[in-house]
Length: 191
Image (tube, rainbow, N blue to C red):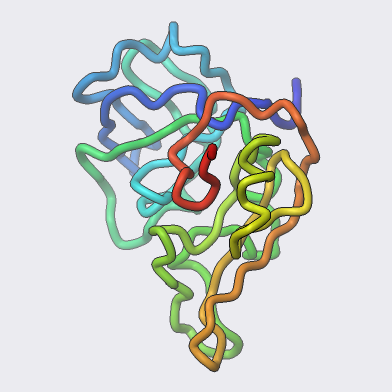
């Protein structure tokens, strides 16, 4: 079993409903079938625009339902979400369970000794793991989102004490063969 894949977006057709109590994600409008979509266990399903709802590792699936490993990286205080956008990727799963919260969902992060969440709202993303193709890495060189290498890149953004946008990135897996572009073109445009 591979620790990561090379597809930034394996499947993202339609919308889904999420039930955190049962750890089930159900295809809603426009979902054709998960069994023929090319997804597999240990892929990562990201729910909501910019991971605004959360993300988890796929543990199993049927034609209409995805089972997830846990709900630790979902927004707390809710048990269900309906009509959410989503995508499934082959990104590395180990950052999801790292004790360092660098790439956790925005509502989990803290600033220094504060309990205020880090939510910069930069293109709807304050952090996460992104599949960056060679072309996207080249285009990003002229932006604040420049990365050292194509591949699976962990990124977090924040506003410093002077009100300036800061971007930190780390290449988690150098990979020149990232394919199937995900909805990250605000950060990593293709041209």
